[in-house]
Amino acid sequence: MSSKQRMVRLSLCLVVLGLVAAVPVFAGSAPVGSVAGSMNATVGGQELLPNSILFSGDNLQVKDGLAVVALGSASRMVFGRDTVASFLGNSNEITVVLGQGSVSMYHDANGMPVRMKIGDLSVVPVSGFKTLGEVATLNGAVVVTAKEGTLRVEGNGPAIDVTKGKTVTLVQRTKAPQQTGGGGNAPNAGRMGSSWWEPLDAGLAAVGIIIGAVGISRADTASDNASSATIAAGNAASAAAAAASAAAAALSAASTAISEANAAAIAAGCALNLEANSMGLTSPYIPPAGVNCGNSATW
Image (cartoon, rainbow, N blue to C red):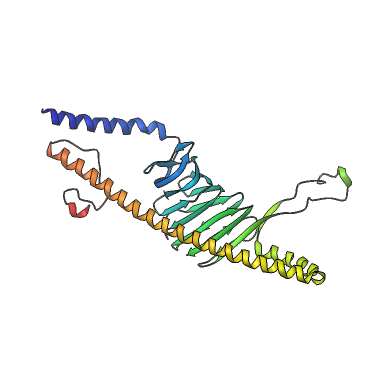
C-alpha cells in the first residue's frame, strides 16, 4: 500500500471516528436548525459561526449585528440587533422563544410548523401558505406584520389572523384583582388579576375619548399635540418600511448563501467519493437523493 493510500484511509477513519464520538455529545438535545451566517452573535456565550448546528435548548443573543438561521427543512429566520431568543424542538414543531428584539421569518407552505412565543403570546404561520413576516417587541408591545401569506396570533383571547400587507400591534393588559364580598379575609381577596393581549387600536379608542374631553377646554394644546403625533407616526412608518426592506434583503441573501453552502458541501463530498473510489476505498459520504457523484452535471 502506497503512503498516499495510507493517508487517505487514515483520514477516512478519523472522519468516521469523529462522527461516532459526536453521537453521545448530541444525544441529549435534538438539532433544530443551522446557521447560514451571523455578525456579533453568540449561542451560550460562544461566537456563532456559519454552518453551526443549533440544538433544542440553545440560547441566541445578537448584539449590534444579525443572525440568519435555517430551521427544519422549510423555515428561515433573520434575527435583528439587540435580540435574545431560545430554541425548543420536538418531532412535531419548532418553537422560538423571543425574549426581546425582532425577527424576520420565511416559512414554506408545507414545512414543519414553527411557533414564535413572546410570553404567553404565540405567532404561527398558517399552514398551506408560503409566509413572509416580521415579529418585533417594543416597550412591552408586540408588532406582527405579514408580507406574504398569513400569521396567526394566539393568546388568552380570540386568535387574530394577520393577512398579507397588514400589521397588528398588541399590548398586554391586566384585569383588576378578583374580590369577594367577605372582606379582606375572603379566599379570593387581593388575588392578582390575570392578563391578556389586545390590539392597540382598541386601547387607542379608549384613550381617544379622554383626549377628546380634555380637548374641549384646551383645543389649541390638543391640536399641537395631534400635529406632533402625526409627524412622529410618519417618521416611525418610514423607519419601519426601511427596516422591512433591509430584512427582506437579508432574507434573500441568506437563502442564496444556504444554496451555495449546500452545493459546496455536495461538491466536497462527491470529490471525496471519487478520490476514495479511485483507490478502491469506501467513502463515508452519502450524496442526497438525485445526486450522482459520477456525473458532475447533477452537482
